[in-house]
Amino acid sequence: MASDTKTRESWEQEDTVRDIARNITPSNQLRLSRVFRFNEPQTGAPQISVFPDSNPTGDTPLEIRMKHFTEIENFTFLAHVLGHELGGTTSRPIRTVTDLQVPDEEFQNFVNMAKTAMVTDEELADSTLDVGINWEHFVASNDNLLIPDHPLKISDVLMQEKIDSLDIITEAFVREINFRSIEKATGSQTGTKTRKSRGAAQDSS
Image (cartoon, rainbow, N blue to C red; front, side, top):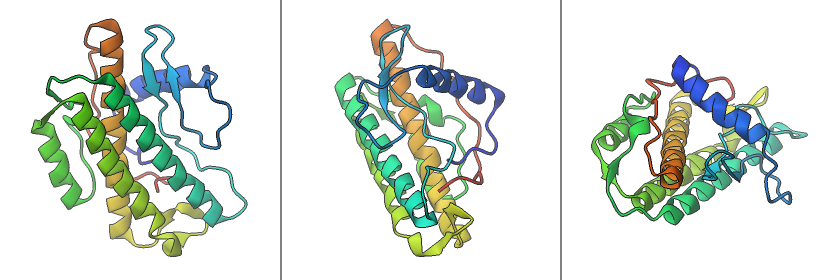
């Protein structure tokens, strides 16, 4: 996960979700992935867990990397399903990208478009699937370049920046879906705090 330069508020916000997720027993115990869907205790709103910061377990660097891109796919599809379940037909801004910065120029241009976009819940869900599957495929297509000591990293620096950028965007979109889910459950806005920038951390894919 890419996370070098989060704001203090972003850390607090994600720590809250992470703490909740740690104390939740996922309803489906028959799973291999560390990402899961759960109901937020106070509101009952469905939520998608925060994408893991740490490497998956594995006997080889390739196994670790394969488990990682499987988690990316699971994370993306869980969010896609939840976004469609929300069913909101009113176009709204994507608040979690307001100050978002990514290392790759191409994907920064995409972020800049997202900053002014107004999307329904289903449109946001579809965009999350689009970006998340790109993230997963960029990771899976570069296994031959993995760095053995850091299997979620590859030796091609420019390609790694693209992967990190897709990671950042996907996680931002999933946070917006989570916020909208809470708002639907409570009938009020969550007062989201967006992160200003994120760089590539050691464990980013």
